[in-house]
Length: 461
Ligand code: UDX
Ligand code: ADP
Image (cartoon, rainbow, N blue to C red):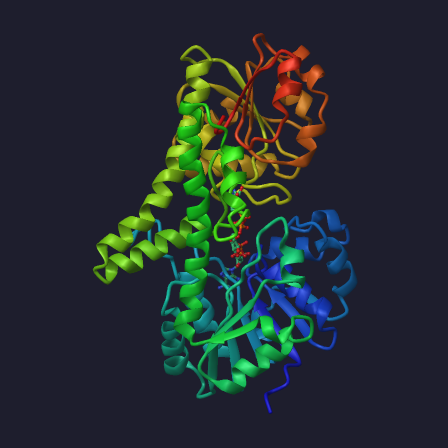
């Protein structure tokens, strides 16, 4: 008989913790879930009456929060109380790439995780099951266990690894109907307790249990494989542009081979998001630290190819605009790293903007879900120029038409559906001539744009 979980605490109310726990609360109304975060502003936003103000935008999330919040889903800054009361604690704090010291730019920074572990150890008065939700380097569970066992109040902690495979923009669907749920651990009873939670809505055949290390490594490997597909097709897109092949046609032709499969073969301006680059860097770092140089270099190429793709997109804009963008207005449609999310972490748009700003371009950005504050913060974070300069050179506007007004070129950075249905004739009429469109997502219809007299460039054509 496994322990029945009545109360869950989730530490970290971000893109993983928020949607994941909302779905658990929806599917398990008998379990009380409290999501805590040290960021009071974020918690206030999760508690906002107006669901438009939730800190995470995901299709379907507002409805679930409306249903469960106040019933069995709570958001709070009282971390100690939630830890104390919970039978099971999910750790969904951020694990960014280290930006200092050993492993700088490669290894995951585990300081947030360690802080959590120490806080749990100091507060817990009875046995707890701890679930790693954040993506972590292999063997983090061992570090967690060591901290807990040596600093705690003599209670038992069972650690499980339960990596999250949701993709932003489709998080709710992915959580309700996952390809698989992976649970790694050593203690049978703890594993069974977590299996029982998922079994409320996920078929048992899709719930996979493994040892801790396999589970931790599977998460990194899954993201590395996915990112590798994108870099592979992007490398082919460069070749298509030279040879006259069309990368969409190549994707379709190879994707129909069931061994290859059709998904994740869309050439783009480059992958972004909080996971792919970070997880590969992690994998590379781990491989290096075990002396596996060839393995490290193999995976490193996936990132180099992604950097090359972003640079190539920017270079093509500069070259096509007669080798200079100095003083020219470039309209950016999209800033998020993919459609249907307000997340911008590692978005290709940030790097493309940075290259163009180095060439003294002036950029106007429109994104349906990303705030001006976020866009400036992304640019400031690069430290390429002062924040005053970023504000001078980049304008963020509220409509696409404002963004494109008087622009020399439009660059599509995110594949938002709404971009397809704009009045492109109106946009053309407002622009400088010749009017250029650089489509980093292969989103628009070439014929339609060329009929309107646009000079249309798309990745891989
Ligand atoms: C990814 C994994 O898919 C998910 O399982 C894991 O839990 C977290 O990391 P996410 O980063 O949210 O999810 O989005 P994903 O859909 O994987 O897209 C990542 C990036 O790759 C985006 O910038 C996207 O635009 C790009 N991409 C994806 C392509 O350029 N082409 C494709 O064919 C697919
Ligand atoms: P992810 O995409 O992994 O969910 P986010 O950055 O969106 O990452 O969310 C992580 C959240 O974890 C942030 O809101 C951050 O404030 C919170 N957090 C980090 N460390 C702690 C901690 N020790 N205690 C509570 N919350 C934390």
